[in-house]
Length: 223
Image 1 (cartoon, helix red, strand yellow):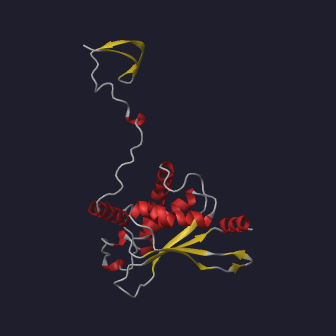
Image 2 (tube, one colour):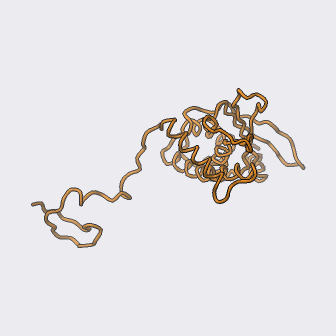
């Protein structure tokens, strides 16, 4: 026979008093009161491949069967976008490489290339580069690229005959776009195969086109 002093019992307010015969199971803290677990740093490749293949199948057939390649890739991009926003929140919460809001465009891209890529895929991306730097109508128009020589999302996807050129890396492009938008660097992110003629190569380039006001802000910060 145990006696404890409680304010709540089984979710009902009882005030301060004494309740008898309360088991340890009854008094466990609510799941919402528990700290966020850091969890394991890795998941098995087979589990990831199974989950991602289901995502690809889902985007092909929902809400209606995709009849165009652009529709399918757009659906993958949209799901990745939501993942990117949540991943940014999680990484910042855990303090992995960014303790405060980043205001420098290049430093944030470096953060994605190195820290985020390692958190998501177990290794940093191969390269971050500016592939075009020119003035468009008197305005800065730099195009940035993140290069992944062997993205894991392209390992276990077999494209159907009618969609031979499907790029499942549109999902990763969506993740990058979501993170950039969440950090107030809105941009269009496009994934394409750098060596489309070489079937042995899986090198993917994620081309990042920032909105005009983002580039103007970046130029002002440099000056």
